[in-house]
Length: 235
Ligand SMILES: O=P(O)(O)O[C@H]1O[C@H](CO)[C@@H](O)[C@H]1O
Ligand SMILES: O=c1cc[nH]c(=O)[nH]1
Image (tube, rainbow, N blue to C red):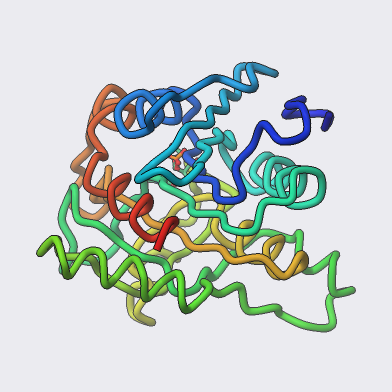
């Protein structure tokens, strides 16, 4: 039993969807999984296992930010033998060619986090990237459903409320699509364990336009993203 998840061996599937919001985890499990069962309520960071298309799948909340997400990813990979992690998150678009509710698949994650500076002694700027076959499976699933998905880099930030909004403009000029708070850690920890990881995001905020979805929408309306994640997970 791990410290922060506390599930018994065998209670977690080899493929796990990872929303930051534990209530989104409950909604996805109850909406899409057959026979969903809650295996963890530790710290309110809910985790569920059920089946999708006959395959076992889990959904685990990770909380907000890279330190929190790193704990859950590490325990899933190190203690429960998980091999595939797919984040299903919200994000703030920083480019005009995206709109609220658009889907983003994060091919790579720039970051202001210091975690990898420590990990690599400040000598290397590690490039956190998605697992390509998993990314391709999500893109293929989107094409089959005629659901548009934008593939590109995101910015994994330590701050939700930033004092440097000017950096978003600079990053957008370099092709970065959106800001969120976990993907660089997810991709790095998965790489460390030789596992597969992908981040799918739904645009909940359009930062240049000042548009925002409600917390209820962030919790219970990201079905298109959940369906792509589940299709890629079992592909
Ligand atoms: O909706 P989730 O998955 O939590 O993701 C985004 O939302 C949170 C901030 O509101 C951060 O965790 C950010 O990455
Ligand atoms: O990190 C995030 C997530 C959603 N919306 C934002 O503006 N930032």
